[in-house]
Amino acid sequence: MKLALTIAGSDSGGGAGIQADLKTFSAHGVYGMSVITSITAQNTIGVLGIEDISPDMVYLQMKAIFEDLYPNAVKIGMVSNEDIIKMVAKGLKDYNVKNIVLDPVMISKSGSYLLKPEAVEALKKELIPLSLVVTPNLMEAGELIGKEIKNVSDMKEAAKKILDFGAKTVVVKGGHLTGDALDVFYDGKEFYEITTERIDTKNTHGTGCTFSSAIAANIALGYDLVESIKRAKAYITGAIKHSLAIGHGVGPTNHFWNIEIRKV
Ligand SMILES: Nc1ncnc2c1ncn2[C@@H]1O[C@H](COP(=O)(O)OP(=O)(O)O)[C@@H](O)[C@H]1O
Ligand SMILES: Cc1ncc(COP(=O)(O)OP(=O)(O)O)c(N)n1
Image 1: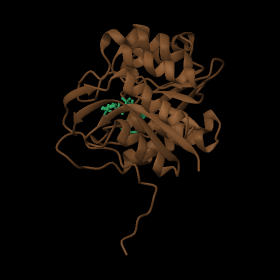
Image 2: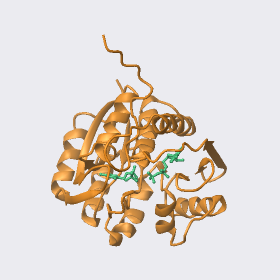
Image 3: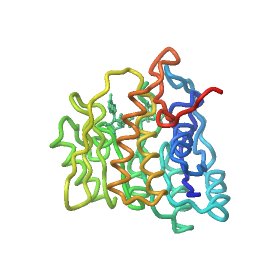
Image 4: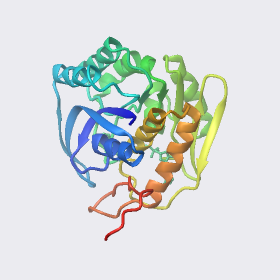
């Protein structure tokens, strides 16, 4: 059994955050573990409240995992504030953790801040240099480089700049562009455009979390990075195609679309 860890916030509605990540790991047949950084009271409509976990408790969760259940890959999502970011970086360095997929979560689709704006610099300085791959969406890439991203050429420029912050590779996600669902992958040498059809649905809650944890799951399974990204893209596309019209707002993706469950 391969093991994967998510370091992220809890989404009580189950569509994003820790819950999406653990479902994604399970859908890949990977044993999932979690370090919870923050608890959000959230549903398909919005975020009602956020309570951060203390940095010491974040570290203790990491210690508990790394001293017993060492992960083959790690996904990082919502890290909320500068003190948590510093503690997460310390834990990853203390235990020499590799294969880190960083989704630099900043604002939910419903418009709530999941990262304090003043913590963006800490994210750049502390976590990006530890990452095998960073997966910003258009807005997050724009915040990281201080420029609005409007098209594929801007996405490529952003990927280059984010690599300069110390990431080994970058995927800039184009889910919020029009036209095909095109993501740009940059490994420091070549650009790859990874494209699928755009699926016409409003139910896209948790797409970024699900995509990044699918990359981590595939890395844990032993696929190389490019193959892991391609497989994650196919997985998120299926999860959006079969997304769930539940709740009264933006419904979640279907994490188990590729698993046949029969009623007997
Ligand atoms: N309507 C859609 N149809 C197909 N793929 C999509 C759609 N929306 C997003 N994606 C894909 O889902 C993944 C997550 O992207 P995105 O939604 O931009 O992330 P985030 O949730 O962080 O904003 C990317 O691979 C993106 O291309
Ligand atoms: C607890 C928590 N973490 C992350 C997110 C953002 O997830 P994302 O996949 O980007 O999905 P949307 O919020 O954009 O639908 C979240 N909402 N909650």
